[in-house]
Image (cartoon, rainbow, N blue to C red):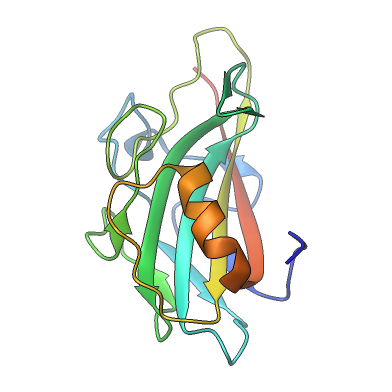
Length: 157
């Protein structure tokens, strides 16, 4: 599947689209994942995954730019959102080397970074093992991704 945006909509009560991510959800704060909700998923969606990626990080890892802050998968097809500091789903490994969420923490003085929170809809309720990196997850999940969209938040230190 090509990675094209779909009609799904992703939002958060913590910040508006293109708005500042509250310190609570960053490495300088409590470092808890924000609540998210999504709507208009394809009716054939049987599972979901969430990714948070900072394309502004000046790093190259696994052949791509940016920094993965969160990878969460094995979310059920009936899901329409996640609570703050969620314990749902299966955690992949972020670029801090940890499972779960690791909030924004750009280098001081590096300017405003954008954080892309992606929702991916899958056409099967596949159950992937815990601890996958983003490239590992995408290699396994790509044949099943049927829709995706994003919510962008910003943060600056």
